[in-house]
Length: 162
Image (tube, rainbow, N blue to C red; front, side, top):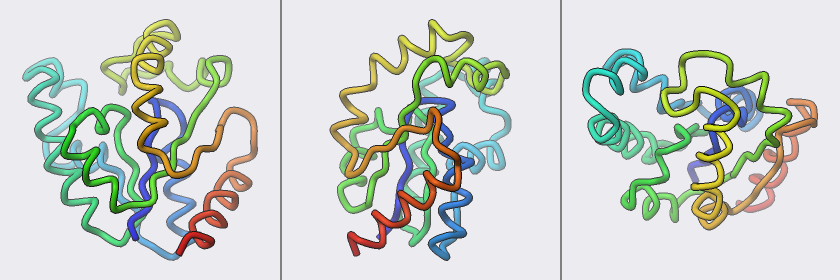
């Protein structure tokens, strides 16, 4: 079964996903990285073509990734697509959450077109929280625990659900 990490920007999906894939002996796919490799920087896509165009590109990459026996990290907004939501029913979906005070130091780069500061991050999280929770099979907070402890916690859950 595919293991999918969802959650808000800066929750640690990529960092945890890479380590989780190693721990589970599976490939790792970061859909945002796949988009960048195929189409260029995400902020540039947003600036030149808009969010709807980006979401179409994202859906194509996510659709392909979800067919793999892998650990897949989805971009924070990928779950907004109804087809992606339906596809996630066949995967083990892990929601990574993070508290605002922990995320403040993580959002200071220009790689996140919808998040420019803590206020915009919180608004985005608030608007998606219910959807994230409804899709998740397992939830863990990444605010304070060591990365390796989070990875082990998720791996043990995944191994226990097979």
